[in-house]
Amino acid sequence: MLDPRTTVTDQARWMIYGAYGYSGRLVAEEALRRGHRPVLAGRSRAKLEPVAAALGLESVAVDLGDPAALRKALDGVTAVFHAAGPFVNTSEAMTRACLAAGADYLDITGEVPVFAKTLALDAAARDRGTLVMSGVGFDVVPTDCLAAHVAARVPGATELAIAIAGLSNLSAGTGKSMFDGALAGGLVRREGKLKPVPFGKGARRVRFLDRERSVLPIPWGDLETAYRTTGIPNITTYMAFPKGLANAAERTAGIGAMALPFARAVLGAGPIKRVIEQAIEARLPGPDEEARKGARSFVWVRAAGGGREAEGWLESIDGYAFTAASGVRALEKVLAARAAGKKLTGALTPALAFGADFVLEIEGTRRYDALPA
Image (cartoon, rainbow, N blue to C red; front, side, top):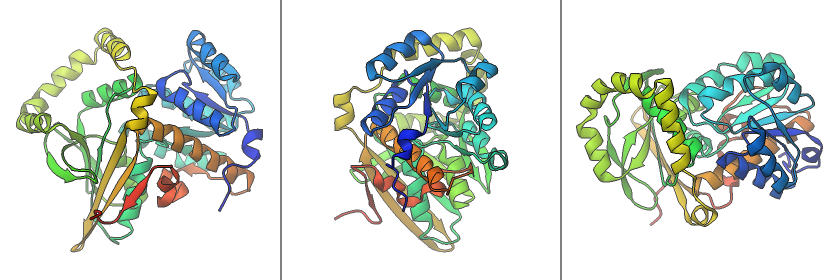
């Protein structure tokens, strides 16, 4: 087993792009706490420099829309931790730059279209001898690892259900990503293909470790990552919602499906979308330290097929705290593998790269194969 906290991680020069965002700063603080000194980067020099000064770290302001400047900024950089969302607008430019520079790419997206694009870079990344890995935070380490663990108990499974609970006090970046996802509409995977579904259709009750909750299907990243990790062709991903909201969404699912094209056309228009995003930034600061310390997150997974089924449950820390912890540990593993001559290459999911037990390395995480008495 490679020791992820070797001196090579001190020698490697790596970058956090989007370091002044809510999650980006948490990742930078966690990296510093664990003895790293990453380069902090982002588009806005005015926002970036105060963060870099407060943490005592090097910084470089560079716009993703300037390929030449971005490529220059990556000279000598071993890996990039990309934390600038919505990732559907930012990941392509950074993955392209990383491939050109021979740098490993990791991000914390939860956006289904981004996973599809980064996983499609497998051959290109192998050719360049680099790694492309999306979802090394709460999106999607807990779900991907638990899905791999449960699926291994049902060989030949054809159905996979994944549900998450406990997310609240969203950050602006998460809020904007969820807004983009809502405009895109609901998705499930059926017979290996992504299929659209109306928001609210398929509501159900799920027993998490703490209690039973109402859940609704949402387009979570595991529609791509769990499919790659497990090969299971039918996947539904759920999120817990208040019971009243879940019931209302189920009742109006058909109306929502008819209204979605109109909402997409109106709310997705440039000027209106920018106003909405500005409002999200103003109203969603993200949970403070005290709120993060007291929060818990939960995951449930069920795999079935051939007359067999298995379930699994996970309890962990606040989702944003989890993202910082798992993201930095993933980066450490990538750098340690490189130093040991066992470099990870291609486009991988967290569970494929690090194994189903990777999630258990995050302090405060517990996994169960049966509900505790």
